[in-house]
Each structure stands twice: as structure tokens, then as C-alpha cells.
Length: 144
Image (tube, rainbow, N blue to C red; front, top):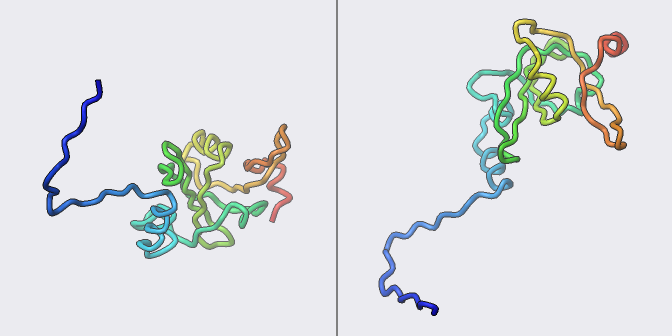
């Protein structure tokens, strides 16, 4: 037996429509509200300084890792990314990464040993897919 719902005769005057923001809408709102790239990178409040760079922009380039922190991703629910303060050519910069090898590697870093020289490189995986990795000490010697 199926019960029929009674029709509501009156609708409250002040009904607020609640809509969930999609990831793209949330990103657009964050971009509009950000006063700088550092704010957009999740480094607002004076934590980290400098322009936001992509991993590709510093691929195979030596830099100094000053500090890093892990933050919750706004793009992937339950995900994490690393926000990394680096010094490149004597200038402070910020780099974000969601690369698993980078995240796992940073999780093993003793922050008392920072700053440390570093470079991010791309390697070919077994399945033919590229992934981000840290340059080895022998590789660092050959990079600029």
C-alpha cells in the first residue's frame, strides 16, 4: 500500500535555497577572494612568500627547500597536497605538489635538517607513465 503525501498549502516566505558548490565553482570563488598567489596556494597569512610555481617550471632545476607543510586538498576529497617554500636563484618561491612520491618523501624528512638542496625530476615508471621524484645526490651535481 502506497501512502500519498499531503500537499502543503503554505510555503514559508523566507526559504533559502542551498546549493552545493562544485569543485570548479569553489576554485573560482577562491581565486576571486585571493589577494595574492600565496593566498591561493594556501600559504596566506604570511606563512610562505613568493610567486607560485608549477613543478614543470622548476623541473631539473636546483633549489633549496626551506620548509613545507601538508594541507587538505580542495580538489580531491580526503586528498592532501604539499605546499613547499623554496629558494630558487636566491628568491623565495612556493610550489604545490600532489605527486605521491613527493608526498611520501617529504613525510620522511626531518625538518630540523632543512634547508636542503633539492631538485624535482621526472622518471619513467614501469607502466610507461611518468612520475615526479627527487633528484639523487649524483644527479644534483649535473643540474644547474
